[in-house]
Length: 495
Ligand SMILES: Nc1ncnc2c1ncn2[C@@H]1O[C@H](COP(=O)(O)OP(=O)(O)O)[C@@H](O)[C@H]1O
Ligand SMILES: [Ca+2]
Image (cartoon, rainbow, N blue to C red; front, side, top):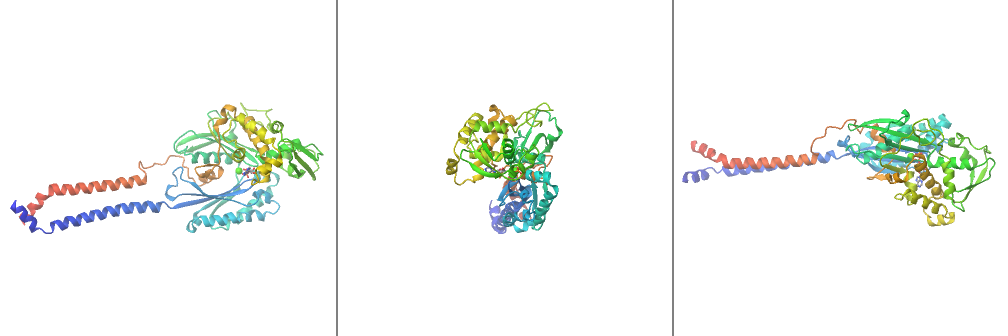
């Protein structure tokens, strides 16, 4: 006993050594945790992508961002910013094509400010043009090529990674919209049932959903393999059935040759506008359907009568159900299986139904509300909504009636299925639309097979490693204290 005390007193280095080792261990642990945290933080740097949606009525620039190291994880890409290009869609510049590119300047300058300069060179830019350009190409391919060259020349000057400007097909537009809404809802990654996509534009409209039934017409069928799951998707895009072109069709159908006045039930009583014949018959959607033998120039007076029932009858005539070579059709002889599952209805479906307060109404209530809304005098409507663009305001009676008819009589959403339609603008901060799906596809950000993911998230992994290091150290110290003392004592005794 006395020997041992003597030994302790005789080895003054014993305590400092333990203190030294303990300090070293603590420093090592701090270094370990700091490295892990710093490593994690640098990985949080974002990457960016730009998609220009060159629609028939206007162009919008979308900027997306995602954490650089999580490129192939689902749900990681988010909308950072959008910019609405001033003026009309690019197809309207066919008379002065050089202005099409220039129109994009303000929004592209904004993109330069929003994206960190050091990322510019690696940021892809895509421009996709939809139905307005499809129609221009139909009328005059040279002009549509010139408009595309104009926007291409303009975008190439920017410091971003230019990836092309093209007219996307109706199938692509439908399919990418479907990918967007399901990606944002995280349905692919979690192998959940998918939601269908309904997109209403100015010049075309798309319906896309997974059907358990066979898709009889090959042009309406797309197959995807995403995250290890197979999806057989039905899609169709109706050119000329966007709400602006549908309105032109409806006007053309009501105009008789030589008419100077049109009494229109789809516009409010008191509405009175002089319009050119050309604004109606100049559209390929009208000429293709056999335009009225009209004076090619000249005007007519568009007068509203505000009658929802008559408006509905006029709109119904736009949907032809007389022929179908398939098991079942939506309209105009286009194959469509019965609608299945829930749907997200976005773009103009949302704008119009949201304005009319019909996003959560039943089909019957919606029809009833349209009767009341269309019967309101134009002067009163204008007074009630002074801040809304007059063109939109004048057309909501027609647009609402058109949407109800398209969904009920066109696609066959019955009263019972009406609640399966969700009118949406955004999902988790990102707009529903084809642009996100387009970028995800072109950058290969949705893999066909589910990537092998580590069982723990990175932060969990770091925490567990740090905790176990601490535990291990504590155990080592304890073991040293318990078992190494006699050995130490013995060795001292030998000396
Ligand atoms: N606030 C709004 N109210 C009503 N309609 C709107 C509103 N904002 C946009 N729209 C309409 O949405 C449609 C968008 O179509 P767009 O994407 O330009 O055409 P497409 O997809 O056929 O190429 C246009 O008809 C436009 O007028
Ligand atoms: Ca669109």
